[in-house]
Image 1 (spheres, rainbow, N blue to C red):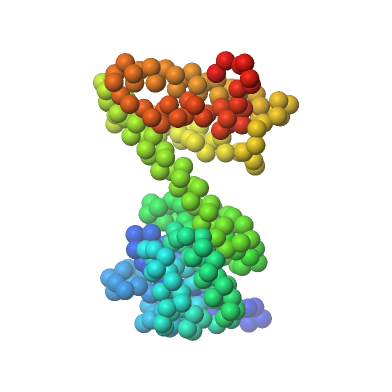
Image 2 (cartoon, helix red, strand yellow):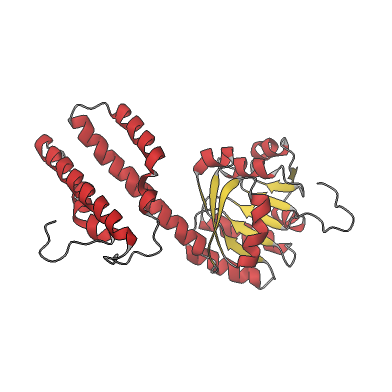
Length: 298
């Protein structure tokens, strides 16, 4: 840990619990923080990897809590998060007033809110701060972290977390907001994965090399932004005809409905069932906020 400069406050001390395939690389990046990092995990091998990068090892959760101002948690599930925070000899047993706990695990929003209440009774702030970017983002310092909770506490994360994330977003003032944002993001993620398998079946039936198709998808998504490219409005309400977005989104609707119709026709010709394609054709216009007017051809 670096020494403090006379006349200046001591740098924030970091702690981290859970050094798996995402938590390990995150902690490895945070080990460069000038205020120091203390880590805890049940795996001595995982601890050793982060200690090699400059972190200190705690002998217990309680010891870690006593030596850190901001503590990140990245464990498996709700039960493990509850145990780490509020279990016997957990973080709350020794956390000092003013400590901030950030939960990076994807858990139920209600779990985060309940734990935040328990922490508040001890003058400790718990924020839900799930991450997007996976192990690759953690290893490269390119994570997105979505934080739910008081803005004042969120602001304190910005400087240290810049070591592991190039996007830190305040999802909302309520604990649980970060998790709700993460769940919406992952809904898109895994629906897209399912749609990918549907597209691959169609391509395979048509005699297309699906590995080459994958290269095309990755290339064009890099250029266009993929599904996130249309997530630029601040509402899902219908778009007014005089709104600048109206012409853009009706153009997307026209192109999308044409291409979906052609893809579904190819699927019918080849005997490939495309339920997501059918759903997309049915819902695209309304979803974009530019539903067809009564009597208007779809």
